[in-house]
Amino acid sequence: MSTVTRIRDQIKNNPIIIYMKGSPDSPNCGFSAKAVQALSSCGIRFAFVNVLEHPDIRSELPKYANWPTFPQLWISGNLIGGCNIILELFESGELELLLKKAINNVNRSE
Image: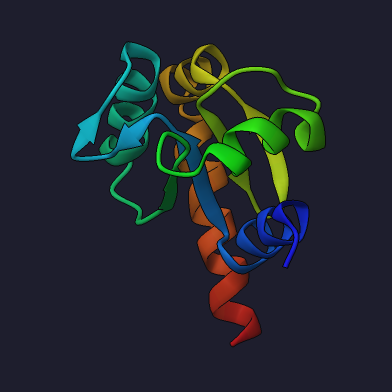
């Protein structure tokens, strides 16, 4: 399976996924730490990929997404953005709404 196919599958099969440096319990950069803190504060489960453990994804995802940096948050198959956008959405209350909508859409389709 190609790296791009793996990325597509991960995004398709996880309504909320963040590509980050490190893990939610142990982020390896300040931007990933802030993004995960905002996500976690919403109380909704999310998937993650540690791009430091997957150099192929770290290399290919920026090209696939046309977004050069990490973290990258994807909700319902759409790229939301990186740390600054995640924090803006969190502060406005929109992040929690987007996350809840993604989970509700999954629950309806099951």
